[in-house]
Amino acid sequence: MRSGIHPDYHPVVFRDASTGDAFLTRSTVTSDATVTWSDGRTYPLVVVDVTSASHPFWTGQARVLDTEGQIEKFRRRYGTRSR
Image (cartoon, rainbow, N blue to C red):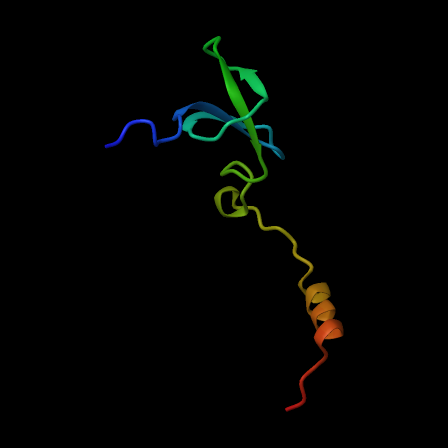
């Protein structure tokens, strides 16, 4: 493998924006925000919208979606097709 062409692979803390759950893993993503982890070291912090702690598939909690409103919005925008 050629040296100098791969991004830096380092420890990063990811935090779920809705639940506040955080986990330490390795990634190439960078961030200006930092957090002190339980081991006393400081790591870059990346806040994400969805993790397994908040995703409906993993939590077993279904979200209520406004499907009727979406259908009506579609029909207003594009009209109904006659058969």
